[in-house]
Length: 137
Image 1 (cartoon, helix red, strand yellow):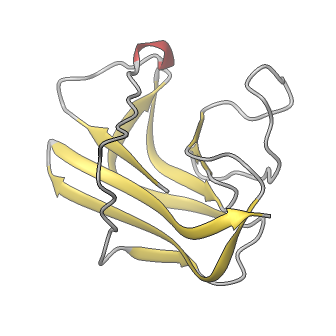
Image 2: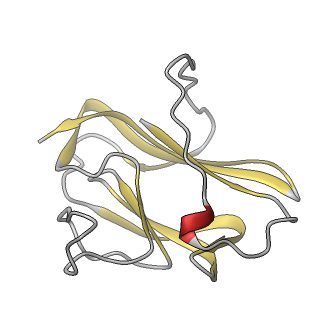
């Protein structure tokens, strides 16, 4: 499971309802290499906070330079995420400014790894978060 955030200098404002999400069933999974490992085996309900993404990313009208990653398959814009639970979009109890790659109660397998990688050059950088070998808990 992998999620990438891309930034292009032309896009200066980005309300959430203007994002385009695509599903490519014909794509090929390419594992990231050389990134930063945040979590390995025995990750269960863990948060990794204040991760610099290497550029300003406009999400829902605000610029963010840091994200927080939750081992349960989602990232939150900003320096910290405290929640370990998943909430439906319609539930007011959940956090705002969250991107869910696979929001579910997850844990890593013995060979699991939560990794990030910033690639590309300004103004075309990509920040990728990879949950490798995670499974439902």
